[in-house]
Every structure is written in C-alpha cells, then in structure tokens.
Image (tube, rainbow, N blue to C red; front, side, top):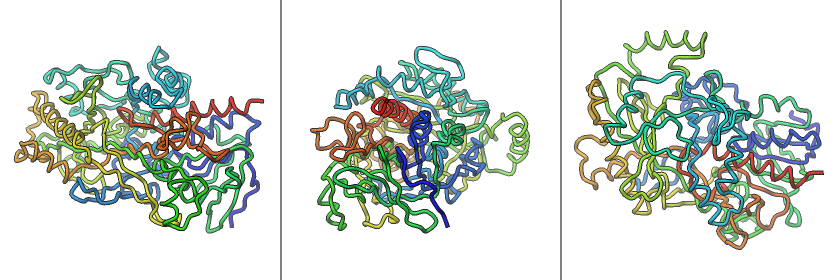
Length: 539
C-alpha cells in the first residue's frame, strides 16, 4: 500500500510534462518552498524514450501515452484521429520529435495585443534564452546556460540533405537557424538532445532537482479533482495504487496537465461552463465559459514517395546491415542514424494567402510513415509533411462524463474554416514542387500520396480529408488574457479567474498557436511563470 509521509506542501503541480517538470525544478530552487509534482504516468525509464531513433517505435509502446482519439471530424470524412500525448515524466517532450522551434516575434506580440499583458516578444525572449543551452553559444537570440540542450543533429540522411539542396530550385533560402528573426526557407532543424540522446523536459530539469529534499515526485498519480473551499484551491484529490488520497497546498495548486487534461480536471472540479457542468451533475464553483474552448492544433498531411534507390530509413531486408552498423556507432559514439530524430529537415514557406510571416511548415522524413508509425511501412521512400501554421478553425474539449477515468471529448473541428482548406491545398502544391526538384531525381521515385490522379484543388482537398492527421500541437483551452473577456480562463499571471491560489501553466494558456512546434514555447511559459511565482512569494 502506498503511504504519504507528508500531506501538505507549498505548491502542488499537477502534471510532470514540459511545463510541470520545468516548474518543479525552478520552484524547488528555493529551499524555503516545498513542492509536490504529481504525474499520472510512470518514470521515463523506457530506453526508446532516450534513443532519438526510438521515436519510430514509441507509438506502439503501451503505457507511455494516453491513447486519445478525437471525436469524428466532419471535414475529414468523419474520421476519429489518433492524438498521441505523453503519459510519463517529461510528458510529450518524452515522445516528440525533439524539434526546437520558438515561433516568431509576431506570435507573441499578437498574444500581448489580444490581452496577454507581459507576454510580448521582448518579454518572452529572455525566458527562451534562460531555458536554453545552445550548442553554438550565447548570442542576442540564444542562451547557453540553461538546462535544455539544443544541438545540431549528429546524423543527417542523404535524403534529408537532398531536401535542403532543393531549396534553391524552388526559390527558397537555405536557413541555418530557424530561431532567428528571418526564417523563411528550408534547412535542418536543431533538436533538444544531449550527447546524442533525447533531452526531454524531465531530463533537462528533473535530473538534478529530483534529489532536493523539498521536492516530492509522485508518479502513477491520477488526479480526480481540485479541492476547493470558499473559492480557494486547497489541494487535490488523486488515486495512487488504488487508494484515494488528498494532499493540500499552503500556497498554490498549479495545473500543468496540458490542453486536454487541464480543462478536464478544471471542469471535474466545478470550474467551467455552468450549463455543461450541470449536464454531468457537477456543482459549479465558478462559471467560466472559456474552459475547454479555443482548442487549436496543427493539422498535417503528407506528400509521400516510394523510391527505387536504397536510401533513407526503410523497413527492408537490404537495410539490415546498415542498422547493425548503426547500433555500434550509437553504442560507442552516440552517433549514426540512431541519434537521428527522423524529422531531420523542414522549413517555413508562405502560401499565396500568407501575410507578413510564413504560414506553412514542412517536416521532411526520409521514410514512409503510416498511421503515426503504428503500422509498418515496408520499402524505401520519403515524405514531406505539410502543416497550416495559423488555422482559423478552433474546437473544444468537453466532458464525456463526471467519471475522471473517462477521457474527455476532443473535438478540434479541423478545416471548418474554408481558409484553412485553401492553405493546406497550397501547401501540398508547394510540397510537390520541392519533391520534383532535380535534387531528388537520382532516387527514381514516384508519388504515392496524394498520387498523380489528384491534380485539381478539389482532388487535393479530398486527399487531405482522407489522410490528414495531427502533428501534435494542441493548445488554447484555458486561454489567457483580459479578466473581463469571457473567453479567457486565466489572467496574464496565469491565475484562474474567480478561484484563489490556482494557476494554469501549460500550453492550454496560449491565446493562439505559434508558428511552429509548441514544446519550446511551453517550457518558456513555465520559466516565466516560475519567476512570477517566486516574485509574488519573495520574503
């Protein structure tokens, strides 16, 4: 039987993912604070988490993901989409592709203009730098003293190199650093890796912090609800090893469970749209209609080729010698293809509908991908993922029931805005231009998706409806902004409106998607929030 030696802490953090791990480390830097971190998953011990190429198999491993699926998507042929989210220390930073992207200045200035005071570019850049340990050293835009290692790839496949070489043929620049003010073009991504291994938020922030006497980490702890009395968060109720346990916070409860689980726990606790809560027999503590709303995500579709050349990361008998050689390269030098994040190259381009900044992102994979890697794709090939960066469609998270064990209803409502359809179609066309460049002719390839039969806009859109999937960037369901705005859930200090001693600190507070991968911005949010909290409780 599990027993708690302590039931009171200054801070309780619910969720040990990118934000939660960062907060636990930063708050416990102050020895006067006692901190408890609750994580629903297990410790991050699976070796496939730490070997970058293990990404190719993580989708098949049970126990390190939540196994979520969306509601049927009306604009995607009523398909239910698989939504991978990490359920282990490090959260989704333990299962993602390790790509380090911040977004652009305009993203954060938009946040501030929409009511998130103090979250403009000049305010957030210092926290990106504070988190970062940049391989190339400190500069105006990079830091090198933080715990999150940001490195160049140790291995770049020949197919990925051809993708970058194709830039000049399609009138795009080759970009060396996608985290500088100008990033329009194609290039290799930097990754969150250290010594050829994944540098998740757990590895970056908890490796040293875990030994601190003022930090308690409890894994396999499923939080049922926040304990609220007189409009104050007092603690949390959770289940561990079949036991129902309560712990209490002297200062604050912090929700860091992500864009799906954070609004679900809030609603189970009586914080959310009153009518929706009453439908599930939940007493409303505070009517916040924005909880669960404003769900945004990056939809992704793949232009895929099969090729005759035996290059890339293939499941094929002829590839076995290469993999055997690579095992030894990785074991002894932490180099070779097993140090690859697979999505080695990509870039940002403008569709014909773009305004000031690129609105399309590409991820190039020197392999054929089926169903997020849950199905085996035999043979040689490559694919270019196409992503609409600033979707105008938005959805919601709703309760399925008042039972915490039942997953929430995830309804992103992809492509419901016609402009998103137009950008995706244009992105596919531009992807085809890139893959038709002379740099790829040596591989003797043929397009298998959408396929040569799909040429008109209607045919390309039909393909997108049949094949598009998430690229794993859900945000926005506890939007921050002005208190008087009914759509917001937290203020600019990330405090939940109407409930004292309760904050939300994770990707759910983002008012709008950033133009790129969301892991680095989530860590930045936690870094800045930790300083806000430390300042508030400074003695």
